Image 1 (spheres, rainbow, N blue to C red):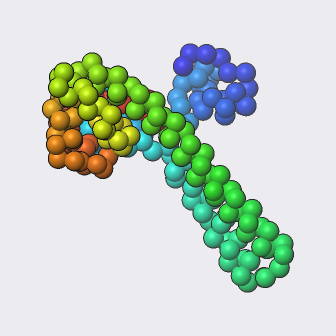
Image 2: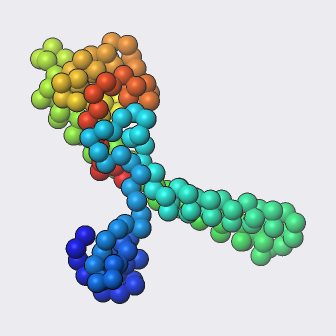
Length: 178
């Protein structure tokens, strides 16, 4: 990103690799969500490799091992270890879920404002009928497509995020998802 790092801690915290001159060059935490204008239903899911493919398997491995250990040893220490592993697993899940919930609330507000601007007059009073799931899914629809999509979602009573997203023909990329 063109800035000098102060040391190994700065590199690890920023998630960037230093080149020979000490300039940040490449992220250690790639964003697997499509960053291009070519985003579509098939590539819009965001995967955070360190969270999904390293952290989650490690947390699950520790939890499974601690449960097996508690059953085999049957001591107070092994039960306490199992409870600690369970607490870590719960925290690991919540660390991901809480920001997503907050972001869904923000997306809901953004999409309500967008619908207010783009929907025909006769559909505007129905904006309150959309669920959070519908609004979060409709954010991918282009401005041109949104009015018809919104009408279809209400008329056909499409409720799942996946089903709404599958209705979208011209995607508007969302590259800011947590």
